[in-house]
Image (tube, rainbow, N blue to C red):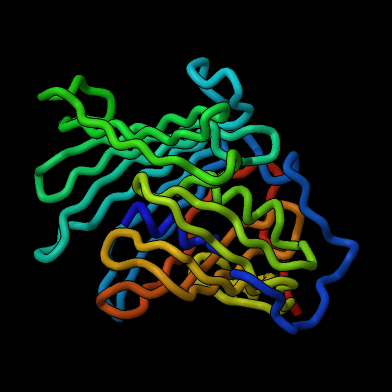
Length: 272
């Protein structure tokens, strides 16, 4: 379910023919990145509510000297007979919201593992450290193993940073194709641009919300077979908060919907 965060915003080659967004509304990195922002989403499949994803914006840690921004996403399934999944995904980002460091901890049916990702821009080598642990920051129960991957590029997104990158670019006029590293494997995320202006309703907001509809394609595979086409609805304001998304997994289509938020000075833009 950690990969739900990836697809909440994910990306495709080319341009989608759609109405041009209002040029008076533009999103800058500084508008999106508000420290202590917290967004909570509920994940559902058909009529089953599967769990929640909580995403927090943090200052960059002292361990990431090139980092300007930090983020953590917590994924927790509900108490269901067919799923028992918990995850913590962290990301450190530079001033352009590209990844400079990441980690992923997953606890699946009582079995825990952690992946830490390291990148050397000089050699373009991407290293994944695998460890068996019971908590995100515990010492490994056995000697860690390592995978290395030679990349053809030196700037990319990870599973959490791409959420913020998409928010900062949702008002762009041209399509974007971005290298994306998911679970130690290379792929691409694509946006169709420009986005269509419309309104969308969710249970947590008592009126139609002015949004931009972002369609795209994930050229990678996440957990539960998460891949392919997706659609997301972002508030049509400078904060560009994703309020809803739909995407495909092995079981079919899932929905991710905003249920709670904490962001100083923000109110959802009311649609007509």
